[in-house]
Structure formats: C-alpha cells, structure tokens
Image (cartoon, rainbow, N blue to C red):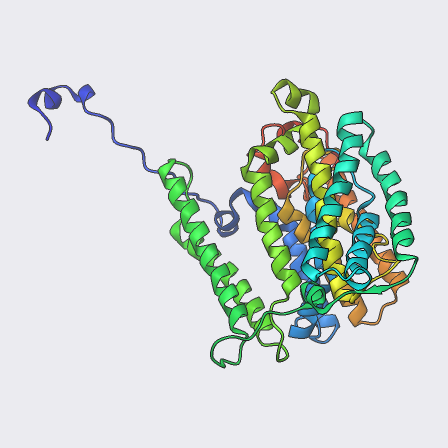
Length: 441
C-alpha cells in the first residue's frame, strides 16, 4: 500500500515495467521476423523435393525411398558435421574419406579375421579414428603445418593403409554392425498399423518443438525483448509439427519390419549434440572466434592451438563413426570405400552456408546442404540418370549456389547463404568480423 509520502512524491513510486514490444509488419515478416532470407536454402530443398516428386511421378515421397535416402546418405551428413567445424575454424580436411576407409577395414578385420566381438571392434574403430585425429591435429596445431597439406598427406597415407591392412580385398562385417548401418527399430506394443517407436519419436519431436518455441517466447517476455504475436508462435508450431508428423507417417507405415532407420537416429543424436556444442558452449564460440579473426581471438585469451587440435581430432572421430555406418550398410569393407567422401562433405558444408575464409557456418545449415545434394542424387537415380550426368549436375549446383551468393554480395545485396547463419553470428563475437572478409558471408 502506498504511503501518504509516496502519494505526494511521485518520484518515490517505481515506474511501471515496460511491456515487451510485439513484432509488427507483413505476415511473412511476422512469421519469419528478420530471418526470411535465412530460409532460402530450406525453401530450395522443399522446391527440389516437390520437383522430383512431380518428375518421378510420386516416387520421391514414399516410405521405401525416404528410408533409402536416409540410409544412403547419413554417413556423409555425419562427416559434414565435423567438416563444418573444421571449416568454421578456417581449415579444411581432405583425408576424411581415406580415414573412414582405414577405420572401416580395421573394424571388419577385427570381427572377421581376429574374431573380436562386434562391440569391441566398434570401440577399436572409434579409438583408431580418434588416434588419427590426434596425429593430424598434432601436425596442424602444434607444428603449424596448414591443415590442407596435413590432410592431403593423410589422404594418401590412410588410403594406402586401407589397402595394406585389407590386402585390397573386401571383408564382411557381422549382422550387429549391419544393423547400425541399415537397421530399423523393433516393433513393440499393440498392433496399430504403425511402427510404434517411430510414432513415439515423431510425437517427441513435436513436443520438443512446442516446448522450445514456448520457452523462447517466455524468455523474450522476461528479457523485455521483441516478442512474436501469439498467432505467429502457434502458426510456427503447426507448420513444424505438420512436417514432423508427415515424415513420421512415411517412416512408420513402410514395409513390415521397417521404421525410422537406425543411421537416422545416430545422425539425429549427433546433430543435436554438435548444434549444442557449436552454439551454446565456450568451445563452440572459440571455434567461431578463431575462424573469424585468429589474432583477435588470441588477444582475447582463446587458446587457438588447443581449439584447432580438438577440431581436427573431432573430425577423425566422426570419420570413424561414418565408417562404421557405411560398412554396416554395405555389409563389408573394401578398398574403394571413402572415395570422394570429402568432396561430398565439403560441398554440403558450403551449400549449407559456410564461408571459405572460416568463421561462418552452422551444423543445421550443413544438414540442409547435405540433404539438397542427397535429394538431387536420389531424384536423378529415380529417373535413371547416369552417374556421369549426376556428377556434372551436382558440380553445377555447388558452383551456382556459391556464385549467386558472391554475386549478390558484390552487388550490395543480401548474402543468401551467409544470412543462413546470421542468428548464430549474433551469438559469436568474432563472427561479425569474419563476415566482412568472407566471400560468401
């Protein structure tokens, strides 16, 4: 209750708290805010999917094809997760395909020739990948040799090591490892006509979307920052949940015994983990800082050698994960494994918005870029287009995507793929610096 003194002296009464501002403007602006252009590559992916759905007479969006698409490209998307961190830090890794081939033959030999249990062989493969990462990280971070040279040497070394260990022969892998590369979740619970675990996964995804958007709204209100109108938040929830439930229906109603693939689960877990690391942790911010401006980052106390070492080492570990997924899907490890995988991973990262000079890029953007490439591959295969034409088209898409972005920037317009990461750049202090020097950012 106000005292008489407070009533007589208005200055003694605390001012009312200001209401949070509500975002205004057009419907698109209210839905996407300042991020309308950030959805450019995601919109391109949707257009590509719909185009191939029409061109292939509805063969694209079928349960079997979506499972094949995910099973056949998950290992490349795993490599793209590690590659985007390498490129953000200002490096590049040309050895991931050879490292994966080397790890794959080690795991296959351990189970087939050395009679190791499948789980021990997987642990051995992960350890080998980690050691390879330590080896290359040492030369890059401690000795100071450019990663391009170190990984170029690694590409030759580990390709030769694959052929040496495997004697240039294909070696089969056991069923447990095959399950990791192309298996499905079990059928549990009542007979609903759906794969129940896939349905639960889809519902959990919708719940996560609703919780995340409501949490972001409550945080904005508490921080007195700009808040979307309630209808905008609800519309976003409905759109995202509709997409999740549509995909859930596709994966849950496939052939008996199928579901959302196990490689997809591994990929999903890795995306969540690394998206959190790159956007919410000190290590992630330091990676962006070093890629944006190494000297400034070091003056700010960032230990660039340690960060570079961890980034390169992490790439070796993820190459091992990709190797295990691939040999599981192909049921064997052979001398031709890993050919040109590094190029696919690098293309996915650049199409997804990373900058050549470092400091810019996101895990989710790389996933979108990888899915663009994978969808094009899949759609062209459905139409019976040969591998030669497919390679030409993929190369042109990569060139045109980056060229359009550079041209837009040179014309003083927005940078399409650079703006994909604008929100993240607001969270990393050095990223703004990088965007002024990056050809794509």
